[in-house]
Image 1 (tube, rainbow, N blue to C red):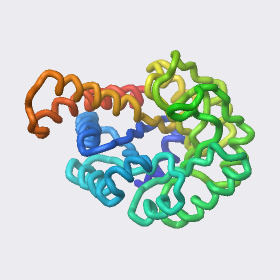
Image 2 (image 1 turned 180 degrees about the vertical axis):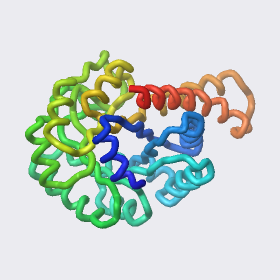
Image 3 (image 1 turned 135 degrees about the vertical axis):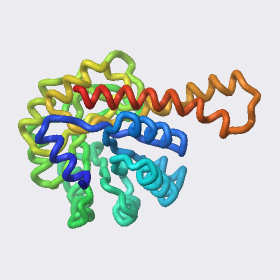
Length: 272
């Protein structure tokens, strides 16, 4: 099943899938371990910065190798793409899905940019995700301006995107105070468009709000910050208490807490 087909099915059945970013072998290994235990599908995401860090071929090859070796159901997605040349490389290299983030642009410019990426992916069974509305990124003001349902409808109709990330009280990175998702906005956007709806910035959102977001129409839930924070926090604690220099001995103990985190998130989403 392609990710395009999976997203359509999730939308029809009012269910969601977890999408997790990975940054190195250890965070990828942690995610795959959790998926193997939970026997649940997942989307593996690479940001542009992670691709620049690891290299496109290395990162993609590592993910594909783990998927095949462990026989898990997973897809590989470019998260927050902005470089059209890199997006084209991802499409040509075998990514299952790409995101073009033109959310910072005026509405019509976002449409034109997004439509150009949809045309790149045309005929290749590759899912395209876009973002509409202000979802604060790291370092930006966490002001909450919601995506307008009428604009969501027009945006999807004019671009043909498969998935749409929306602004409903969510933000990337750590929240300064407990977030409160606008469930009525999610529900109204769900009624306005057939595209799969994506919740970015799920790190720090309470479990009950995640469940409610799914019930009201969210189909893809992105998780990144908690993964980095859990891995680095565990690793710092380990290094503070050991003189061991063999990273093959040290790193596994930092992988396990991330696996536990992903297992919890998979269970939450599967049982929502």
